[in-house]
Length: 288
Length: 305
Image (cartoon, rainbow over all chains, first blue to last red):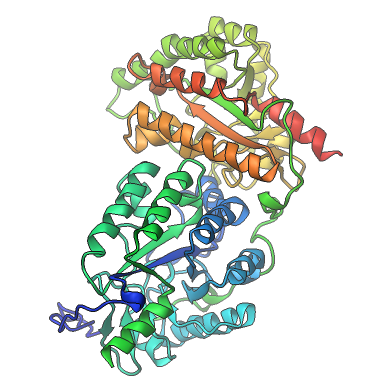
């Protein structure tokens, strides 16, 4: 990025927009991004951001998120598997140490992993270059040791960045970033070296926004997903992401309506249900 | 620019939690629990709260507390409405379906509303300790001696009203790192503060946690998320449907906590939604209405096998 500029120059403001279909003639690529996270109960302070709203232990904050790793991961994952949706996991890589059982379950389902930092309670703001390199190298090594996979993507821990984040992940050979929300299509990102694209993730249909920004009921959120899909399916070459947190979508009052939404998207016929890497690779093929 | 090197050290990065309060366990891998009848224990928990018109803010101001400059007649009286009127509507609704419930009670409510607590006892409901009054909040900024004294005071004042609870609910479910030990030392069998699970589990010190889902509470869905009473009831019924199906598929019983507040769900225009929900659940063969203590008893008995 161009530091200090009003437009940080992350991407071409007016790209040549191509309309195309995905494999099988599908108009919209749909991917599901479960965030498999570990939040520390008593993390060290960061000068720019508090980890918890309450003094440690923030019992509700911590234990709500712990619900993912005891109960709701499996509930959410079973629903996804039942309707043929693989996960592309935004992973707090320290989960590989704390709860390898959860990571193993996701790996056994054939899910893809990308990095969401070490912990969702450690923020990248103000890191020196060697510190940011350390968390990228840690992510690559940790996921490789736990799953055999080489990560290809990055969603910054708790969405915290430095001006060099995109350059560094491209330099380490990663293929995609989930941190930019400027489009409904895969598009190139400007970096010093390497070949990085932005894949549409989503804040607006992220379950966290649905339930804690827009205060939707489970049924309202399911309807939101269906409407998002309906519009994007009319715009060939677009991507729809469903970003999830098991402790939210996997609550017993929300998972039923969510399952109905997945079922209807899967049955529609216009969706190419894929992983993030499959979508990025297919996009590169269309450009070639 | 650079962060303190310690920020990239992870001394607790190892199998299990980064704390020693309790051990990790996945719900779907545990031996199944069975209830005396039905497959979904429906635990109605009513909070009986007294908000002093002088908020203490030590260590923090409870949700629902005073909001205007002193004297805040508006919120003092609107909250007290719950103890004078709303709670009685709950008692009638529970009696209508023959449900046994829990009442998480500030000691101050037991003292100020003895006729209400007598009716709670006469109906066979359980009382759970819920601190002294809504100024009796806990977090890590409270010195341990003050926290111990608060827990003792709540217990002693309830005892003076003839009530010896088994369970404890912290205000806003907020604890310090010491709270599980202090509750154990004060003789409590269980607390309801940690929302990480859907069945009872034990802390390392032996205290039981009975998870009272905050996301399903009337406070969260109606007061915070500003949904209607009907939307709340629909969400609870959706949750029941899911849990009943999960119990049928797995052969393992489930629990649905319904946390309600007299000044929220006990209002005239909302109470019917609560009554209809109870009636619809009561008609389901999977439903077992139970108090917190009854659920904990089942957990303890089956844990020993």
